[in-house]
Image 1 (spheres, one colour):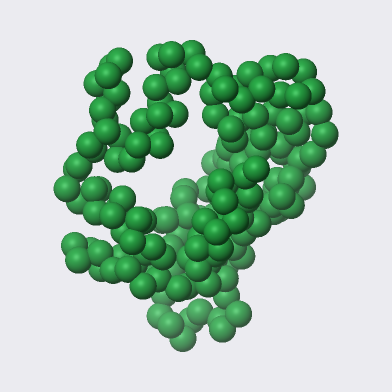
Image 2 (cartoon, rainbow, N blue to C red):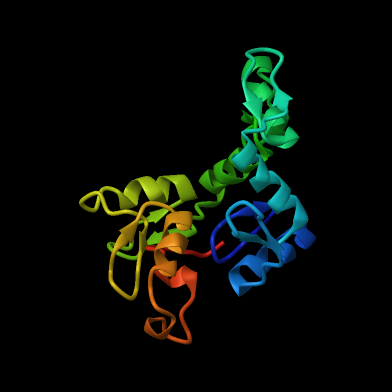
Length: 186
């Protein structure tokens, strides 16, 4: 069964992968990219990132020729062509191509809405719907700097933005999740 990061909503197949991911939030990054000096929590993450510099997408779809950086993304993509839907809801029998689609759908039956907008308190069943909702607030991006109040459209752009602040401007208790304009109760 999948596990989720309570800080960012990212989904993992194993508890060990979640534990490794939590190092990202804790600031533990021991693998450094020789091209851009970005740091990563694992050798696998660094290897995947290096492909962004080389443009290497070694996994090709035999149906349409699209190429992907990793095998798991290719496998999920191929389900578009095959129509394979291996994940079935026990509640209603509806089938899904991706496991996280089933997990999100299941919330229809439970009524669970774990994502909450900090601006208006509207709740949502899934992360992507919450991000879409946030943009209804005058086009607000889902992340807002707690130091200068600038908005950022993605977590990675917020991380880059924060590097522009002087270390003395950043409070000692500051955490990236404080910039999220939504709450997650998963």
